[in-house]
Image (cartoon, rainbow, N blue to C red; front, side):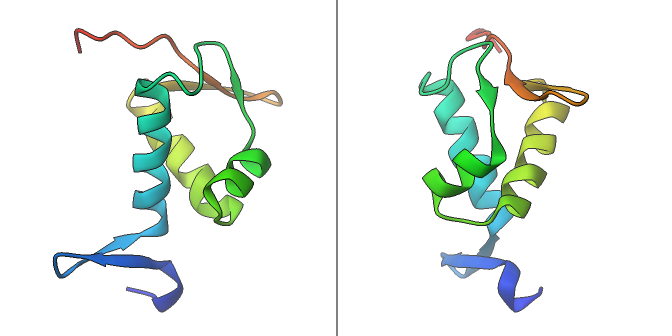
Length: 86
């Protein structure tokens, strides 16, 4: 694993910055720190989470694949309503 991708050690396992961004963004969605329909701007998120935009954008695509957010071409990422029965 590349040295610059390693965020921290957790019980001997390395956690990448993408993993950390993913976990934090998903937590923000479930805690409703971001609300359904809200636009997620990578620059703002990177400042908030104190990391570069690249891991943020990669995490956003992971969350899109899982159905938590939607990507609108030329518009950005938006939070989808969360089904608590999932």
